[in-house]
Length: 88
Image (cartoon, helix red, strand yellow):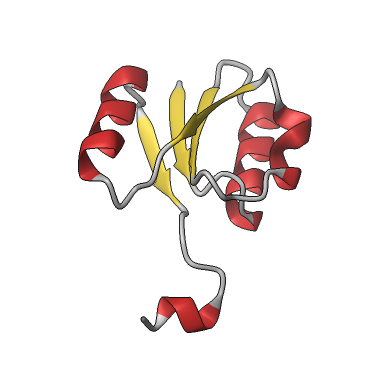
């Protein structure tokens, strides 16, 4: 099973990756993240998760990332975590 997680460096995305790797032995996990994302939440997953730098606002780059990995499932967990930015 191949799973792509947008926002993998965030709270929900990193916990989902942990859960999938712990409970699904056949899981292949890839995560999309922004260049300025803080990666502390996923440092322990290095070597177990394919990390792909991709700004999901760039439709072409996002499509290319999806086509390259060919996931069975996509979990879209990317979001603005700073409330004032979300309202702009």
